[in-house]
Amino acid sequence: MRLRPPMSLRHGRLRIDAPQDFGVGHEHQSRCWLHHEDCPQPALRFIGVSQPLIDIRNLTKHFQRGHQKIRAVDDVSLSIGIGEIVGLVGESGSGKSTLGRTLLGLDRKTSGEIFFKGSALPKVYRTGDFRRYARSMQMIFQDPYSSLNPRMTAGEIIGEALRLHSDFNKADIATRVEEWLVKVGLSIDLWGVDIPTNSPEANASGSGSHGR
Image (cartoon, rainbow, N blue to C red; front, side):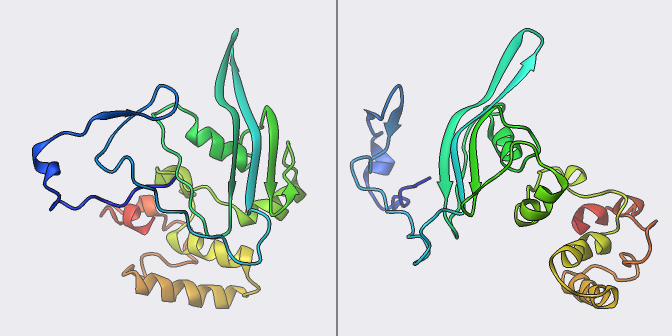
Protein backbone atom coordinates (compact mmCIF):
# COMPACT_ATOMS: atom_id res chain seq x y z
CA MET A 1 0.00 0.00 0.00
CA ARG A 2 1.45 3.36 -1.04
CA LEU A 3 0.85 6.27 1.32
CA ARG A 4 1.40 9.95 0.74
CA PRO A 5 3.84 11.79 3.02
CA PRO A 6 2.17 13.74 5.84
CA MET A 7 1.12 17.31 5.12
CA SER A 8 2.87 19.93 7.22
CA LEU A 9 0.70 21.63 9.85
CA ARG A 10 2.24 24.90 8.72
CA HIS A 11 0.12 24.65 5.59
CA GLY A 12 -2.49 27.35 6.15
CA ARG A 13 -5.38 25.53 4.49
CA LEU A 14 -5.27 22.76 7.09
CA ARG A 15 -6.53 25.19 9.73
CA ILE A 16 -9.08 27.10 7.65
CA ASP A 17 -10.70 25.16 4.81
CA ALA A 18 -11.80 21.60 4.19
CA PRO A 19 -10.67 19.85 1.00
CA GLN A 20 -13.18 18.90 -1.66
CA ASP A 21 -14.22 15.37 -2.57
CA PHE A 22 -12.47 13.76 -5.53
CA GLY A 23 -13.61 10.63 -7.30
CA VAL A 24 -11.08 7.81 -7.02
CA GLY A 25 -11.93 4.69 -8.97
CA HIS A 26 -15.31 3.00 -8.71
CA GLU A 27 -17.51 4.28 -5.85
CA HIS A 28 -14.57 5.69 -3.88
CA GLN A 29 -13.88 9.25 -2.78
CA SER A 30 -10.75 11.06 -1.64
CA ARG A 31 -10.67 14.21 0.48
CA CYS A 32 -7.10 15.51 0.66
CA TRP A 33 -5.27 18.73 -0.25
CA LEU A 34 -2.46 16.65 -1.75
CA HIS A 35 -4.78 14.60 -3.93
CA HIS A 36 -3.19 15.67 -7.22
CA GLU A 37 0.41 15.16 -6.08
CA ASP A 38 2.23 12.00 -7.04
CA CYS A 39 2.57 9.19 -4.51
CA PRO A 40 6.12 8.17 -3.65
CA GLN A 41 7.24 5.13 -5.57
CA PRO A 42 7.52 1.91 -3.56
CA ALA A 43 10.99 0.77 -2.58
CA LEU A 44 12.82 -1.19 -5.26
CA ARG A 45 13.08 -4.90 -4.75
CA PHE A 46 16.43 -6.45 -4.09
CA ILE A 47 18.75 -6.22 -7.07
CA GLY A 48 19.16 -9.55 -8.84
CA VAL A 49 15.88 -11.03 -7.52
CA SER A 50 13.68 -11.68 -10.53
CA GLN A 51 10.79 -13.49 -8.86
CA PRO A 52 8.64 -12.44 -5.89
CA LEU A 53 8.98 -14.16 -2.55
CA ILE A 54 5.23 -14.83 -2.46
CA ASP A 55 2.99 -14.78 -5.52
CA ILE A 56 -0.77 -15.21 -5.06
CA ARG A 57 -2.85 -15.71 -8.19
CA ASN A 58 -6.66 -15.61 -8.21
CA LEU A 59 -6.90 -17.03 -4.70
CA THR A 60 -10.44 -17.90 -3.64
CA LYS A 61 -11.69 -19.30 -0.34
CA HIS A 62 -15.38 -20.00 0.19
CA PHE A 63 -17.04 -21.49 3.26
CA GLN A 64 -20.28 -23.43 3.17
CA ARG A 65 -22.69 -22.64 6.00
CA GLY A 66 -25.79 -24.74 5.47
CA HIS A 67 -27.22 -23.70 2.12
CA GLN A 68 -25.32 -20.41 2.19
CA LYS A 69 -21.92 -19.89 0.58
CA ILE A 70 -19.63 -17.44 2.40
CA ARG A 71 -17.21 -15.74 0.00
CA ALA A 72 -14.43 -14.96 2.47
CA VAL A 73 -11.72 -14.44 -0.17
CA ASP A 74 -12.73 -13.97 -3.79
CA ASP A 75 -10.20 -13.91 -6.66
CA VAL A 76 -7.32 -12.16 -4.85
CA SER A 77 -3.98 -11.69 -6.61
CA LEU A 78 -0.87 -10.02 -5.18
CA SER A 79 2.88 -10.50 -5.01
CA ILE A 80 5.34 -9.71 -2.23
CA GLY A 81 9.03 -9.23 -2.92
CA ILE A 82 11.90 -9.90 -0.55
CA GLY A 83 12.09 -7.06 1.97
CA GLU A 84 8.63 -5.72 1.13
CA ILE A 85 5.80 -5.20 3.60
CA VAL A 86 2.19 -5.40 2.45
CA GLY A 87 -0.64 -4.11 4.61
CA LEU A 88 -4.19 -5.40 4.15
CA VAL A 89 -6.80 -2.89 5.27
CA GLY A 90 -10.43 -3.84 5.70
CA GLU A 91 -13.31 -3.99 8.13
CA SER A 92 -13.85 -6.93 10.45
CA GLY A 93 -14.97 -9.98 8.52
CA SER A 94 -13.61 -8.80 5.18
CA GLY A 95 -11.31 -11.81 4.78
CA LYS A 96 -7.90 -10.52 5.93
CA SER A 97 -7.24 -13.34 8.40
CA THR A 98 -8.70 -15.95 6.05
CA LEU A 99 -6.28 -14.83 3.34
CA GLY A 100 -3.37 -15.31 5.73
CA ARG A 101 -4.62 -18.68 6.97
CA THR A 102 -5.13 -19.91 3.42
CA LEU A 103 -1.68 -18.71 2.44
CA LEU A 104 -0.12 -20.77 5.25
CA GLY A 105 -2.21 -23.85 4.57
CA LEU A 106 -4.25 -23.55 7.77
CA ASP A 107 -7.39 -23.28 5.60
CA ARG A 108 -7.73 -25.23 2.36
CA LYS A 109 -8.11 -22.92 -0.63
CA THR A 110 -11.13 -23.24 -2.89
CA SER A 111 -9.18 -22.29 -6.01
CA GLY A 112 -6.22 -20.25 -7.18
CA GLU A 113 -2.47 -20.66 -6.90
CA ILE A 114 0.10 -19.71 -4.27
CA PHE A 115 3.82 -19.66 -5.09
CA PHE A 116 6.60 -19.40 -2.52
CA LYS A 117 10.06 -18.71 -3.95
CA GLY A 118 8.80 -19.87 -7.33
CA SER A 119 7.39 -23.19 -6.10
CA ALA A 120 3.65 -23.83 -6.07
CA LEU A 121 2.31 -24.58 -2.59
CA PRO A 122 0.14 -27.69 -2.31
CA LYS A 123 -3.61 -27.46 -1.91
CA VAL A 124 -3.46 -29.91 1.01
CA TYR A 125 -0.41 -29.81 3.27
CA ARG A 126 1.25 -33.10 4.10
CA THR A 127 3.95 -33.70 6.71
CA GLY A 128 6.75 -33.21 4.20
CA ASP A 129 5.17 -30.02 2.88
CA PHE A 130 5.13 -28.46 6.34
CA ARG A 131 8.80 -29.27 6.74
CA ARG A 132 9.58 -27.62 3.39
CA TYR A 133 7.40 -24.51 3.67
CA ALA A 134 5.98 -23.98 7.14
CA ARG A 135 9.36 -23.29 8.72
CA SER A 136 9.79 -20.32 6.38
CA MET A 137 6.38 -18.76 7.09
CA GLN A 138 4.67 -17.81 10.31
CA MET A 139 1.38 -16.29 11.41
CA ILE A 140 1.36 -14.23 14.60
CA PHE A 141 -2.11 -13.91 16.09
CA GLN A 142 -3.20 -10.90 18.11
CA ASP A 143 -4.21 -13.05 21.07
CA PRO A 144 -1.06 -14.53 22.70
CA TYR A 145 -3.10 -17.47 23.98
CA SER A 146 -3.75 -18.41 20.34
CA SER A 147 -0.14 -17.86 19.27
CA LEU A 148 1.75 -19.63 22.05
CA ASN A 149 1.41 -23.05 23.62
CA PRO A 150 0.13 -22.52 27.19
CA ARG A 151 1.78 -25.78 28.27
CA MET A 152 5.25 -24.51 27.41
CA THR A 153 7.37 -22.12 29.44
CA ALA A 154 8.57 -18.88 27.91
CA GLY A 155 12.05 -20.39 27.75
CA GLU A 156 10.81 -23.45 25.89
CA ILE A 157 8.93 -21.29 23.41
CA ILE A 158 12.03 -19.20 22.70
CA GLY A 159 14.19 -22.30 22.43
CA GLU A 160 11.83 -23.93 19.94
CA ALA A 161 12.97 -21.56 17.19
CA LEU A 162 16.59 -22.54 17.77
CA ARG A 163 15.66 -26.20 17.84
CA LEU A 164 13.92 -25.97 14.46
CA HIS A 165 16.26 -23.60 12.64
CA SER A 166 19.74 -24.35 13.95
CA ASP A 167 22.16 -27.15 14.71
CA PHE A 168 22.53 -26.18 18.39
CA ASN A 169 22.41 -28.95 20.97
CA LYS A 170 20.25 -28.76 24.10
CA ALA A 171 22.99 -27.19 26.21
CA ASP A 172 23.69 -24.48 23.62
CA ILE A 173 19.98 -23.73 23.28
CA ALA A 174 19.56 -23.41 27.05
CA THR A 175 22.50 -21.00 27.22
CA ARG A 176 21.15 -18.83 24.41
CA VAL A 177 17.66 -18.77 25.90
CA GLU A 178 18.97 -17.66 29.28
CA GLU A 179 20.93 -14.85 27.60
CA TRP A 180 17.84 -13.62 25.77
CA LEU A 181 15.66 -13.79 28.88
CA VAL A 182 18.16 -11.64 30.77
CA LYS A 183 18.30 -9.12 27.91
CA VAL A 184 14.53 -8.52 28.05
CA GLY A 185 14.42 -8.41 31.85
CA LEU A 186 12.80 -11.78 32.61
CA SER A 187 13.93 -13.90 35.55
CA ILE A 188 15.83 -17.07 34.68
CA ASP A 189 14.57 -18.71 37.88
CA LEU A 190 10.96 -17.98 36.99
CA TRP A 191 11.18 -18.90 33.30
CA GLY A 192 13.64 -21.82 33.45
CA VAL A 193 13.70 -23.86 30.26
CA ASP A 194 13.64 -27.20 32.08
CA ILE A 195 10.64 -26.61 34.37
CA PRO A 196 7.54 -27.69 32.36
CA THR A 197 5.09 -26.77 35.15
CA ASN A 198 6.36 -23.20 35.25
CA SER A 199 4.07 -21.99 32.46
CA PRO A 200 3.20 -18.31 31.86
CA GLU A 201 -0.31 -18.93 33.23
CA ALA A 202 1.17 -20.09 36.55
CA ASN A 203 2.54 -16.63 37.28
CA ALA A 204 -0.12 -14.68 39.16
CA SER A 205 1.81 -11.40 38.86
CA GLY A 206 0.77 -10.94 35.24
CA SER A 207 4.22 -11.48 33.79
CA GLY A 208 2.75 -14.17 31.57
CA SER A 209 1.55 -11.55 29.12
CA HIS A 210 4.90 -9.78 29.21
CA GLY A 211 6.66 -13.09 28.68
CA ARG A 212 4.75 -13.44 25.47
